Length: 304
Length: 277
Image (cartoon, rainbow over all chains, first blue to last red; front, side, top):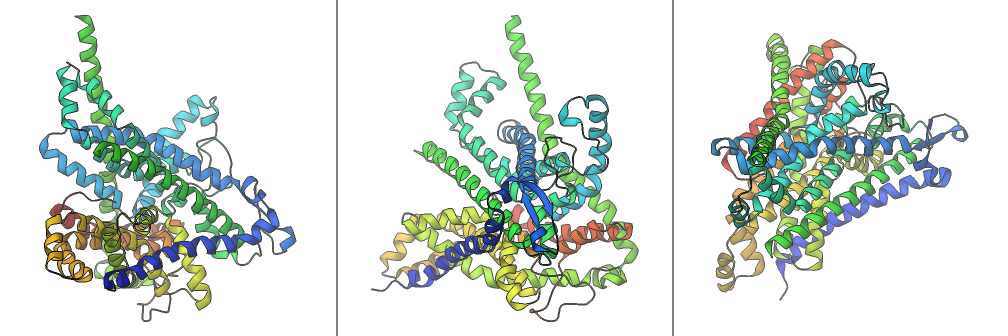
């Protein structure tokens, strides 16, 4: 007997797979001219020389790749303590009437249009950070290399990292919260029965969900690295490869957002942008697969 | 005794830290909502109905609002049928190789950098057509919508008790009838939630529209093969302008976008359980 269900649904599944493979293919083929011309240097060098004369053109997107990774690292460094605290608070300590509102607030934050974060970030957050965080740090602690860049505009790796942290915290906490609430109740009873304080109990229970925290962090990193508009509004869009937190920078996605529109004027700029996109594609794929794998394995262990 | 006190003290410090950090985690949302309301309301109040219906040069965002609705509608038209079928497939064949891959692929696509989708659609649709268009923008949004709705469909179906499945099959129905006529209607609440959340999500997307929709703010969209505007895209362009008046329009537009988003999201969220974004 022919299975009409399979006949109806399989084409849709096939279409989604083909779409994904098609994306990889399109990025790869369009990036090829850049690889032929610049080789691996397109990823290793930090140079952006556009020219109408193709032989004069020279590009390397290392700064943008660095910026994507660096801002995302700043973001998860800030988001991790926030989201763990939030999860512990919601599951263990929040009074009943506060639990649901807290979860709803976090869900709204996770779904809020990113452009609203971008607008708020560019016009409210950055001026605030510049006046109250960057300037004091620069004035008093600029002997530390991290803080040695003068925060003239405020648009910087630091601003982008903070904004991304705000955006990914609810996302990471959704995963961590779910895992934390899955810890069997008997474990809690056992820990408290031993006379642990709430601090000690939480420390032990957090240890139990460590894989879920790791994967939540990795997935948040994956989300931060792909974010485009909010970042491109606060990062300053300058090719700058540095640890200095207050220096303006670039990320792959903001580079694409800013340069793609006029890239067709130059012969090699479009392929280079596709090459940058391909790098982002593969980094995102690897990071997300890793995060999902760790999470999946942990869930299997818990349920078994 | 002193040891006990040290432990108690540690606990107190810890609880205070958790409370403060939790507060810090959710504080930005309130600040964002208040900022958008405080800076957006005066703009809308000052320009009145013109702000909602007028073109950009008249100080309004009418075409952008129309564009957002058009794009979201078209994205739903392209994306929902595929998403529904893929979600059902992933539910029905969870242990087959393709079924497992489908699930993984959906989860990956959920996390995918949205700007890459926009550039992809530009390459396959905008360049051959020679113009930015509503179709291209909607296709990009549909690619982002599909995994959301498919994952929700999958989750909603999984919550139906297994006995209903057994009962339906024992009546001698075919697999297609069991799934489309019996089980899917039972999960329609969950599926509908997924659809609405997906729509709320894509209505606020900017990056995938950058190189596909083009933007149209001086007249209302009249053809799906021509460029179209969208509220998020307009805000993005206005923020980058140095003029203060443009920033004001951006705040007003953000308030409209925020209200659309909250208007879809809050009712669903209040009526249903966990939301996975």
